Length: 160
Image (cartoon, rainbow, N blue to C red; front, top):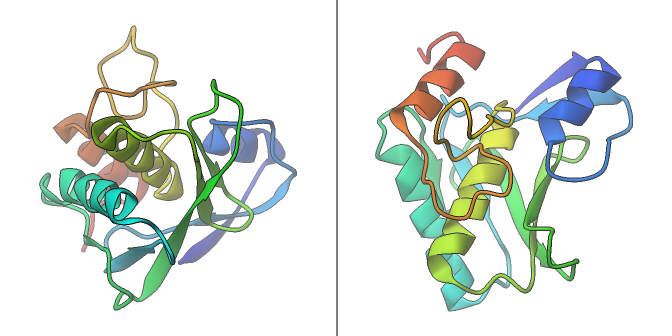
């Protein structure tokens, strides 16, 4: 995990999927290292959706995301009650992901998790007018793309 001090404006944009965030250091998780994505107590369906999200990023050949707790860093994914328009949120102050408890479709759930992990790895929203991306706001259908992987590579100055 790297803690990076960002301006309050950038920290708010980084989170992107909820209300503005307080200023202060933002936690970004280094996808170039083995990164554990855990969800203690998650149901089998949610665990499967998390595995799908990790596989969708790892299939692009850059990230090293794992569902076990062997990574040098970890992101915890939790599920919470929220309004229907809320899909998920990356909390850059805590370095954790919250997903709407009402999302039950495995494919949509995996996309939302992949989207929030994108924020955790330093990505911002991408307008659908620019390109199809897992980072499109409100996205429930587009998996991570090669261009999303290249965006991570540029954030992290290409993985070692």
